[in-house]
Length: 482
Ligand code: ADP
Image 1 (cartoon, rainbow, N blue to C red):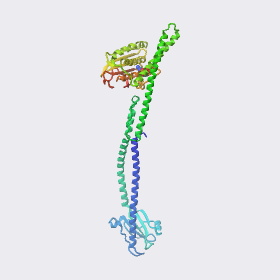
Image 2 (image 1 turned 90 degrees about the vertical axis):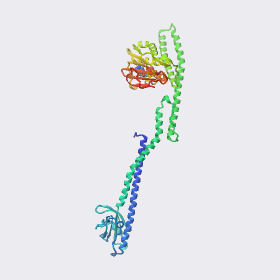
Image 3 (image 1 turned 90 degrees about the horizontal axis):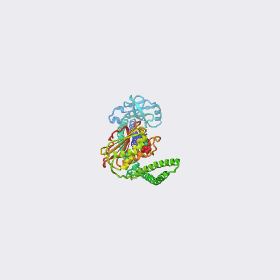
Image 4 (image 1 turned 135 degrees about the vertical axis):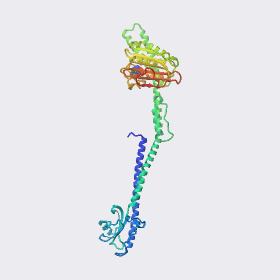
């Protein structure tokens, strides 16, 4: 069953209470009826003795029944009495319910003749009303048998009244118990909801946060403490991993620089055989891309440690985009991609080198994915206190499922089509834009192309809001990073 715990606790407690109340109610009603019947039995015994006293000897005296009902002036139908002869024939009788036939059967008659007084509940009269009867031998004349009967109407009415009362009060009590149980379960589980909410909000970037530990010494306190312990271990593990990444990338820089310069020296040799030169050039290319990856890793490691130091200066997005277009001109020409630039002065106070890194990553991707004969449009503009830039291409676009992940590290939507990158370019773009207090997002439509847009606040707190649309945005479900 997938019901919330709160509801399950409430249902179980109400069900248990209902069973207990039903059992207790049944016990009380049965006990009350038994006690009332016992009272009736003792009244019957008194009446039988009175009748016996009236009939002092065999054949003498008077059959007289002064019943409770008669004393209380109740209708005669509520009690009856008979005097039976040895053959079981009714000799005398009183009360409406006492018919000419005996109130007890032949078997009971035999048993009573053996001297055992007998109590029974029988149905008498035309309405087959329940009566309690007592049959016994006359002590003075054992041949004769006195049978006295009293209606059980009042007993049944009392038991019925109590049953009705319990049936009326029961649901009300169960409702109160249910509401109380629901409230208690809610109050008891509220800290768990708070812990769940906080834990759900803690991502890899916020591992220094902790869940609230309730000031109690119960299971929820233990849960919060355990969860905080786990977060601490995670935080330490992630920090160690980041430090390792930073140290490793840093350490790799020097040997790569040495290899790069040694290769350059060797390639300057004039008498180098052609095949050796080709090999060295290929190695040089690999070293270049390895160097770029190490730089990327170092940038990310620094961003993770909050050490992506920016050197902000008055910058112009449009000028930077023009400069990057110039730098990528050969790549664009080789791929037969036309890169156009629109917009004019877009001043911003930012780290120019880092902003151009973002522009280079976005434009290089667009040139690659636009493919032969494709088009790339770079637009810059200012809006709502932020400098904005979008890089649009008419390439294959990004599949819907991949859109939310393109800014993740080492993510490549389609590794078979990837241009040899390690999936770090957009992750770096995101870190740089975030470090500037900005925002980056992608919109795309499969088969139509992709548009990457980022914006940087021109002043502190001037970042644009998510609902502002940039010109030329297309497609649905933007993948974004903030
Ligand atoms: P890489 O260096 O491998 O390109 P990126 O982080 O720059 O890594 O890009 C991640 C993934 O996003 C790429 O592998 C590619 O699948 C997708 N991608 C990025 N830019 C574009 C684009 N302009 N058009 C289509 N897909 C893109």
